[in-house]
Length: 413
Image (cartoon, rainbow, N blue to C red; front, top):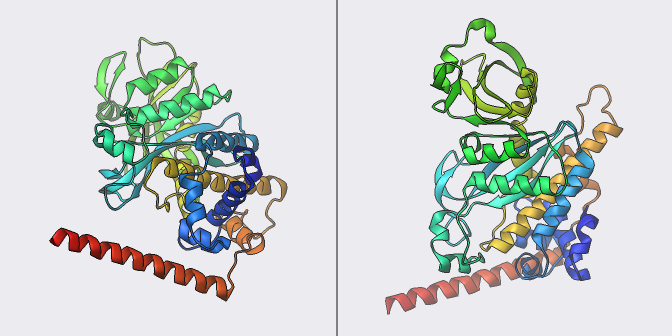
């Protein structure tokens, strides 16, 4: 796994340390950061891990390229879908790069948070993130001093989430990889520039849109929810959006042809919950007409990004970084992507080579991590090492307390 990226590190020490960091991300540590992983790996302080993330000479974007190639080599699928979505990490303070009060689905409300857009490759063999981009709000890009302090270029230009998604999709395609479909939520479906860019590259999409989105049919322009109200009962079809933890996710689906001046096949796809009647809407485009089942399959692939975020955070420490600067964020997230990709690849290979016997479900990423931790990873846990780290933490905390009190005294005078 880490041998794949070894050539990105010129010296033995960072190669060894990056291996230890990735293994620490895959470990069963209850909290994963430079301190806990350094102690787990047998180092005498977190300085080396912090140096690896902040000051050591290596290119996180080059490693990101390696992660993408690793995923494609092992999970390649001619019918794979690229899924784009963002995830937020709740943060304290105002100095962490990109942080501000903003909505994040992680918390389900507006919080002080950092938000990143991810590109996930989803095929029949498995799914894993292949790219990432940190969302930098306007409150940052209009403040060059703040950008500089966080390791961003002073001339950093604001980019919307759809613009970040377009960049990642272009990187994927420009690297020589092919994919037939893109899917994402309303943030991306509601952006005409992103839809137009995908059409120009001949990439089909099934992108969610709001109920208020206006679309054009042969009878004129309508809101999406107004068109849904006109769909006759016989036009709805019960189809599965894919298998979930509790079986197939069945919904009722309807599709309406749209009239557009641009070439290709344009449709509005409508999904209806069979229990609640709740509706969801998707703008769809493909170079040539495709059956409803294909559009439903692509729409259902969107759930893979949620599974990827859940596994990346729960198993590989994707959201547990305690770094402030952009370089450190890029490096931590990229290595967490590699750690999760390893689990996804092992899972895919095990399912293909060793089908589960009767009475057992196939190996999951969670179970693979448990077995990997139990039989492969060998952390240092002797008493002397633990006591030395206890002393180091207390010494560091004492210095922090003393510094805090000095600032208080200076402010009073």
